[in-house]
Image 1 (cartoon, rainbow, N blue to C red):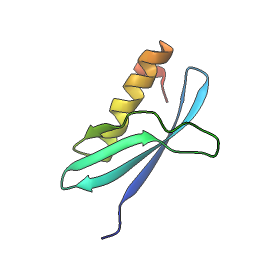
Image 2 (image 1 turned 135 degrees about the horizontal axis):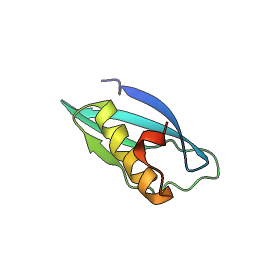
Image 3 (image 1 turned 120 degrees about the vertical axis):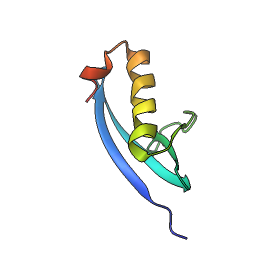
Length: 74
């Protein structure tokens, strides 16, 4: 079975992030920062029932880390 992946791009705290949300089961998505050459993969994944929900969990966490209101992360 082919994995479904949705990509989201967000600018948060002066940084550009590419977020990938992957379907990992029925009504289960995992979002993480897309891996790029030379970039650490130590970021923990975030989960949700939809790709949008999983990505939003990660956007919220990144917004908190950068002290940016979620409304401005986008």
